[in-house]
Image (cartoon, rainbow, N blue to C red; front, top):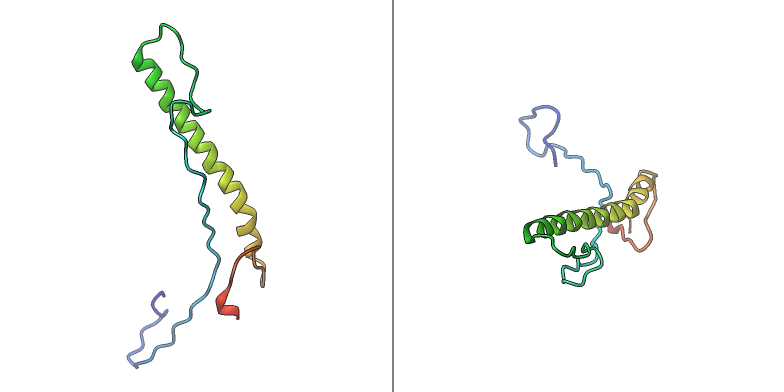
Length: 97
């Protein structure tokens, strides 16, 4: 809770708390096996360093895509949460019960 806006020497200063939503999403586990779909196809005759660099870029792109997909799911929920009384599906608001 933030401190009160002014100083008050008296005990029992009033603190006002506000509740707001928080969206958390757990994405699926990233498959890092040799046969993962995101891995680039091996190029015959390419050196190991170039293939490792291409794999790193592909993994980065894959994870970034997963993060963006999860965010796309959460963004509308958080936008709707601003409406008074809105409760996202499968959520609980114990302070309202």
